[in-house]
Image (cartoon, rainbow, N blue to C red; front, side):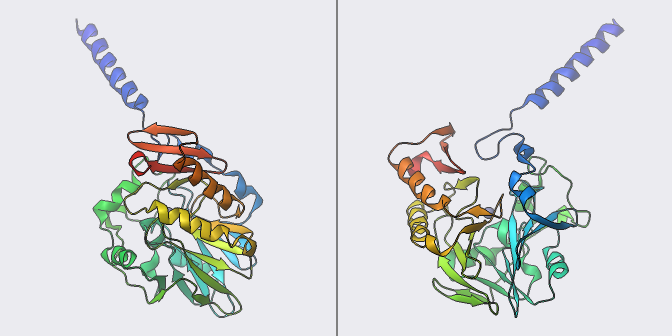
Length: 317
Ligand SMILES: [Zn+2]
C-alpha cells in the first residue's frame, strides 16, 4: 500500500512537471526560444571590441561609430556611440540594465551628449546617468520621460521569458527604476546636431510613437533609425502607434534614400542596407490592400516580409 502511494505521488509530480514544461509560452510578439536566433549572423562580419560588464557587446561600425548591443535580453537593444571632433553622442541608452555610461568612458574621453530617438523604456533607461539629453520636441514624449518608470512596472522585462543569460552582477533588480528626466535640449525636424566635423540632421518620423526621430549622419551616409525600422517585428500595434504617420514617415525616408547607404537600427542588427525602406512602404501598402501573409493570434496579426515583419492589430486595418 505504501509503495503504491509513493508511486502515485511520483506520477502526480511527473504529470505536473511535464505539464509545466510543455506549457506553450509562444505568441506572436515573443516566440518560444526567441534566443535561438543567437548569434545573429551579421555580428560575425563586424569588428568586436569586447564585452563589458558581461552585458554589453561593443562593435566598431565605422572609424567613429560604436554599436553598444544588449544581446541577453529579449529587446536586444542597440545604442550607438558616435564620435565627433569636439564631442561624442550616445544615441539611445538601452534598457538601463548595466552601466552604459561606464562603457562610453571606456571608449572615448570626449564629453558625451545623449540623443534619444524616442521615449520608450528600452531607449531612455540609461539616460539619467548623463548631464546632457537631447530629445524631439513633442509633448507626449516629454511627458513619458518626465513620468519615468517605477520598479514594479519594469519587472516584466526581466522575467525568465525575457532573459537567456544572467543579469550583470552589479545590477540590483529590486531597485531598478527609470527616474523622471527632462531633456536639456529639444530639437525639431531639420535641426542639425553638431559634434565637430560631424553633424546629424534630425528627421522627424512619428508613427512608432509620437517622439520618434531618425538621425542622418551625412558624413558616413548612415541613418540612425531608432525604432522606425529594425530587422525584426516592427511594432505597429501599441496604443501610441499612429499607422498613417508611420507610413508617411517611411515615405519621407524613402524620398531621401540617395543620402544614406546603411541603417543603424535600434534592435537586433546595427548594420542594415537602406534599400529595405522601400520594401517597408510596399509592405504597408500590401497590408492595407488586404494582401500579405500573416500569422494571427488574439486580434493581432504578424505579417511576414523579406527582412522584417509587421505586427498590427486587426482593428487598425
Ligand atoms: Zn525599442
